[in-house]
Length: 162
Image (cartoon, rainbow, N blue to C red):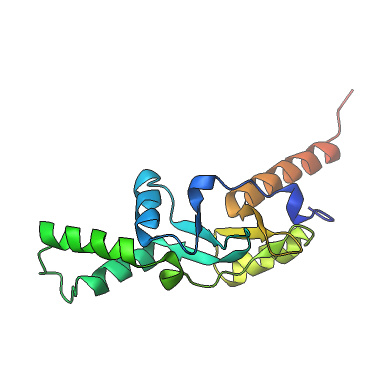
């Protein structure tokens, strides 16, 4: 994967995994509920500039704090659910957004792999030079590319007996 740049392996992000920082938290709840395999939402401002991420874990912590759940014995009631809904409509995603390391489209894949390994990330946002979110890089895509490269290198090194 020498000389490979991030733009060659990044994937477009579904609009359903992108939220604007001025939206109510209810939109994040709906996005996570609709896509149960999703653990991260990418947060952008009105210009599409990446401002951070909302992780499912952060959202659950927000709910826990808002409901004052301090023990596992706490029983969540229907009124608790309505309270979370009410609060999620009055609080913005910006309030639960955390910073996220990103890479640029023009960065070398080796740089991205090092960052992902150091920060134990399985997906990383990809931005352009202006900071606009353009895609994501997933560890699964990197591993797939690596396997293809290994298979290709092995086939180049095999000899045929005639």
